Image (cartoon, rainbow over all chains, first blue to last red; front, side, top):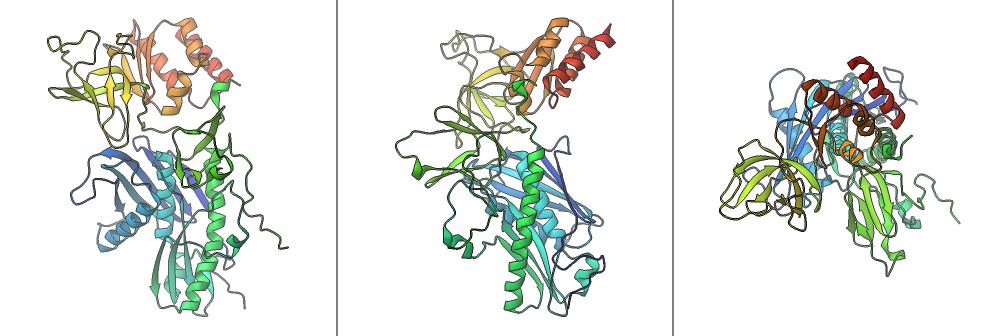
Length: 240
Length: 242
């Protein structure tokens, strides 16, 4: 039986994605990522010299500040900051600029479900805009499990509240490679960077979510690649 | 024989295409006995070369590869000429901000005819046109106000004028040869002095403030215009000035 969603989407359909970069004048890199009505603005400053106490001086350190749309910062914001910091630390090449700090500030402009994945996508696009060296990009998605046991992608806030459980999943982006693809690569498990789950879900449902999430992340990856292509204009010095 | 999924066809060459971090661009196992020089934005990962920064992959025959991208921050590289601002002075070095990940050091003796007796006195905030001598990831970059042979060659403090910041891509375009259209068009009608740093700082000086403002605004607006658009923009500005 097909699940009918409130806004008419199919279970595997994502909300319209939009990404714009280099919006803020003072920030070294910035990006605004929106998935439907969930909009997050990310600003990156750095790498700057100096490191905070307690951080390893042989590596670059990453500092995340999360600013909610309304209200003061509390425990939920601290949790988001910690998850983002660990995710971004795993995609950045920390040995390239030792003893520096890169600050990422996230401002929630709109919250309509799947906030953390939207923030991760926005901060990844902002890091690319700032020129911070990265191993690969991170693409995030929210997979929810409805009462009937169906997997639904990119839920809105009202859908999230009715769900039995949901998971925020972060995968590396699909990269182009000049290497010939080994025949066994098709059967390999997709790698996962971060997984945050809320609620109770069985392992088979979780594996199901991983599969759906990975396929959706391939689409988001393609979108990210296309959006980054248009922002690099052709070589001007050739003279047109 | 299974049909391969066409989701990620192997690219025979990514040269002159936009590449993203994580893309693998060269397979070294097929290129034995060749020396390859890697510029910015690329790193070696065992047997492959992969991309660290998003941008256009370029190749300069025979063997130099790099990723061309434009950012607001600068990654110091040896033999670059840049504009720095003095932040502090120590007994042996001046600490200079070059818009990079760390502060750079300018030795007090790195001037033409520099001895312990005639150390220049730079106040905090002095703008300097300098050359990068050494740049490693783990050390503060070292600068010098002389060229490789020891002559002053226009390096040193820049007095008067106006300095503004741009992206590194625009600075490279301004320094390209043949002369970029915007500078050529402005130079035909106005007379001004200009110093361009590869770290995205540009200094302009002219006899009247109006000229300085016109030149600075024209350069800042020319980043995403083509050659003909730049010439048209300069013509319109000159008409308004008269």
